[in-house]
Image 1 (cartoon, rainbow, N blue to C red):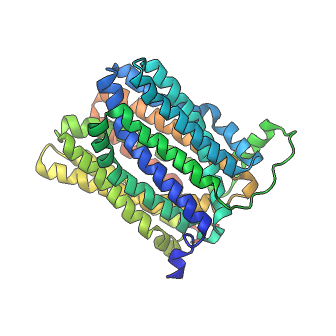
Image 2: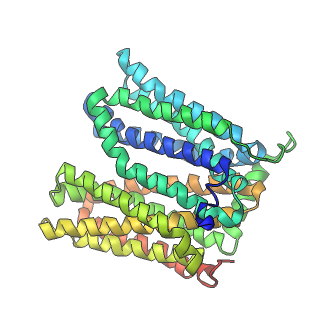
Image 3: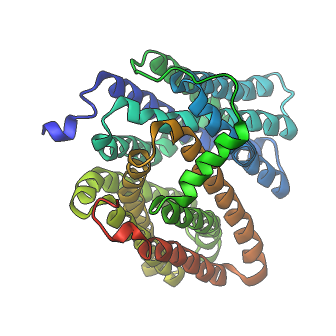
Length: 408
């Protein structure tokens, strides 16, 4: 029993985990409120909807490598705190602009660009701070706890968000997310963590970025895992774009049933995250990651086979359940592996490098899928999605990750 409680027995990790859980639920509320605000209240055109979606991810492509370098130059706790404050202010501006009657699409895009910029620094710091809060031997377990919170937010958050949107209206509901970031900042400000003193002020930013890239793409096992993950994000960005069109339009899935579909994903993600430490300990993190990657193309084959019948709808739920289980099983093992195999002085750059490219690939996948559905239809686009998921699995399976249980 002590093995299970080890990370949470540390007061700093418990505080950090609580902050992450609160902000995850706030994010889930905004995931419901933002589309309602954009589509129904601001009456955005399809192109404007795409611009709003892209605005949150563009800063990752522009600032990702720089944020990683500074996450290694500066103390990470202050970065995490101020990034949360910045996100709270950015989101808080949206309901204020709405209530004063001046909110327009371009203003929303500006606030989301600012939100995304603060998020780039925040995620670079948060993923790099965790190894200072728990022993490296407990990183998979600690990441599993964080994944459980995310899965719970994905399961319950949409229902909470829908209720708040109905009660308060979409713009006001976003205040809940802004407040969650302020609580996140307050909790993380009280963390007791020993961080190394900042390095010399005169540094070569280009050389530091190059150092992060070299560690990420020249390491024996991290390099193929990074490549596999980039391809996975390309496939997943396309898959989730096709899913909404395929399920709601081609299969005739009702809106409430689509919400249940996402809830099933959240529930099985929670199950996967709960068993991830034990599976990783038994198989090794490398082999666990490969097993999960091999499950994704199977899940999307099931999606492609679904028909506009009751049996087809059931098949869709089975597919999303498998997708969620694989995601929950994989993520904590992958994050723990990266954190455990990267020197502390490189963590910020390595984490930011991966996240920057991953988010860019996801955005590209969504854009390509949208165009492909219009040109060749959703069924054929799904076949392409399956092929790309299979390529991600193959890259991992043929890498040294399979050679040893500990992935060394």
